[in-house]
View (cartoon, helix red, strand yellow):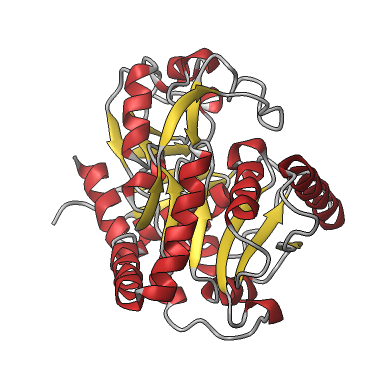
Length: 372
């Protein structure tokens, strides 16, 4: 066998965010494949202690004999160290990112790893010259096998439940989701829209107030009826078992965002047998099973809640078509109601596809990338 490779892995795996989780799962994937990985934490918010026992054990190792350094962070923070092979892992959600000058930083390294095929094209268009490799994200699929029934929402029972999990930021396109839902479904129909929301820098109460204000303004602007169905919106920190219990009770996950390098809640939903509606021509195309909303490239706009240099109107993201979103949400509901066999096939396909992204499967793939 080959000598065990020692890899220094720098990332924000203790930040309690989607990207923090992705980073932690990558470390555990490499570890599961027998790579000698040495994690070092950086943070983009308030630093937290390492809670994962295995990662804490790995942190205890010495950096002696490291041959490769993975920098899982924002390209402007990359630095080249001639003692190592230097690999950068980064995520973007737009068709190009040259106006942020990220390619200059990425080209300092030996190679770049990105999670989806859309990003390979975006990187090439944006002037990245170093080799770009596909390194998908992963989840421990065994965590989604027997979801305990520990959280309940009375309104869920006897209804078809759409599920959205994400931040209240412009890129996630929640406003269009609300427009589509209330345009397509009459309050008398047994259909719910469940949203688990967070907003960076806002308390849970403030986040809910923001959502209520957005929902009210959408309904006023639609001018369709006096009374609309109330969405089921939850903010605040839920234990993952409670969140998974709620997500598992939903019948369709929907992510209408303008761009997504991945979407962890979509993959979690699929692991529990829930098909996904997603914006076509984004990173979600690689793994989502369900329905694709046709989309077209449009200049980024109003993304004032992100870093100054990204999502500017000098680049594009993918705008999902509103009327298509309406009809696809209708198709998901009608399939569930009138064609259970076809709907159950989608459930089975979702689970099968999700399993391809199990920690151990992706660990093997990442190990191959290291040895290429």
